[in-house]
Amino acid sequence: MSLALTAELRTEISNTRQCARDAKIFQRLSALLWLNDGMTQDQVADHLGVTSRQVRKWVRLFREQGLEALCTLNYLGGQQKLTDEQVGQLKDQIQAGAFHTTKQVRHWLQETFGVGYTRGGVTDLLHRLGASHHKVTGFFWKADLVEQQEFLDRYACDPVGPTIRRYFVDACHPVWGVELLFCCWLLVGQRFHVGVGSGRHRLNILGAYCPEDHEYLDLRLTRDNINGEQFVNLLRLLRASHPETTRFLLYLDNARYYNKAVVKEWLARHPEFELKHLPAYSPNLNLIERLWKYLRKRAFSCWQQTFEAMQAAVSETLDHLEDCHADLDTLMTEDFHLIDPAQFPECQPGMRLAC
Image 1 (cartoon, rainbow, N blue to C red):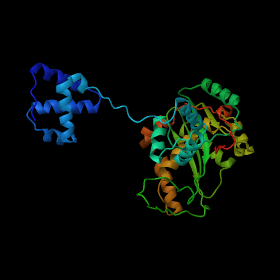
Image 2: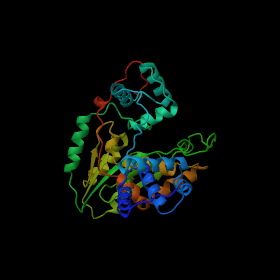
Image 3: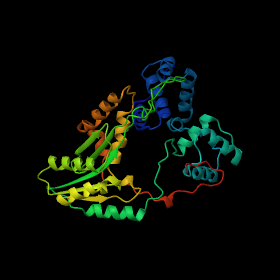
Image 4: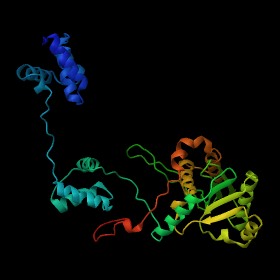
């Protein structure tokens, strides 16, 4: 089957194809041009991945009704099973965290509206509604939003300069053999085993992170616990690392060892250090908490068969943060998220929410 086209018509078809945004229209117009170039009907069908019969239909439509009809797609798709009101109710349930699985969504649609969906159909429906499956976000419901906002207001007014250093301080306690369970892609039906230990070996880390230049300093202890004496050792490390600094501002939580007598005595002799305590139940305001989360994701994504191997994995991350700028530049920003418990929906009867 050949197709004769005038030069003017061919130019029009070519220009229309160039502007076509729908792949189906692009296919139809390509078929006309290739037939005009001398390709056979079977060759065109093979190039487009369609049947020869489909190519004949396109040519017949073009000859009988013209180019505009060929570029008009009359397929309307499947009929929507849910009304707009029902879709709105489904979205409300999704926003309330009512569904943990697509099976629960299918059951709810059947029980509430008498509408049946396949498992794949429910998944497609959820994607069309803009829903995704991911972990819920925990929050400390005892946190005081007013106190958190007041802290951020004070933080924004704290001085910054060449002789002033600001650090977020916190402790982290990775436990060997416990924090090794992680997610990864596996073949269908495959099980991948990692060893877990007794949880008796713990690495205690007391770290300080500077938001201005992303400097990180820490103490790592394998036998001793974090206490007032160790906190003083961290202060000495900061002072020795920056002897020219005239003022250190440290943002930290309300752990008891920060208020020990040995700490108070050392601070009295070194007034350049000032401790600024975060509001209670406010880890979201401590920037270094994000670094701990990053450490766990990066260092504990494989099985360390010994405690020493876990220590090495921690050091590989914390001692080479300069190699992680692509991740940390977006993670370690001074963009603090305030969580207001009053904004979270209450559990409704019959709903399985993570409260």
